[in-house]
View 1 (tube, rainbow, N blue to C red):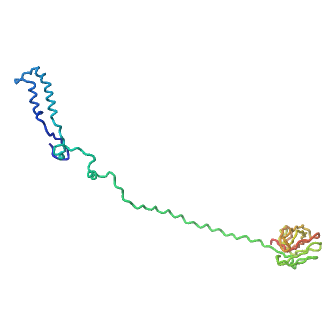
View 2: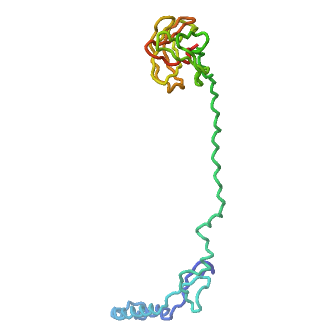
View 3: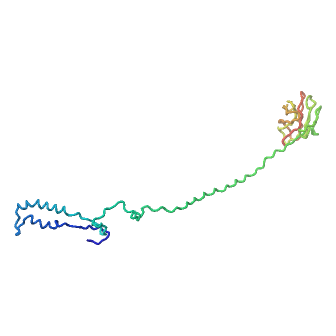
Length: 263
């Protein structure tokens, strides 16, 4: 038998005596003659069944062979202890775990902050454009000493009027007129003239330029006899100084404050 170790080795434990005597019985059952002559046929047929019965009895008396590991892990009676399931807890705990242990906890790392937006660029400088200046104007007061008042036309004071005064009682007769002298323009032609006046009712007046009739102007109410209103007319003037006369032979004209022309 091999040396004791981890290999399992089968051992045959016992053999009964009837099996050891079986070879000696077989010649006797055949009654073979000692001189080597052929046995009688009748005796062979008679003992054949006897031989079979003895062989079966011998085999039945042979105990089952017992197998055990060579490390001697058998019970005192020579039998191998049966396997048990589940195995002992100690054996299970010594086996390596098939699942790796989880990694140690790591502190999460914060993502980097987003990049700062680019700084806003200042708008390009805007070229400064000077605001347009109003064209120079020429203003002519009705009560100015250079003008001519005829008939009943006369100056009167009014706080809201330019210069604090204006000229009234124009019209109602052909002789009650007001003439603005020295109205000067640089070029001959049609020029826009703004007439500032005062009236509490609708009135009309005739306009003559340099002694010639020009047109009839309608003056709506300015809002009262202490309120100044304005209307614009277009007159044909000559280059240099001009005389503009207002009157109304059929009715009263408004009171006149001043004339304004572009310079």
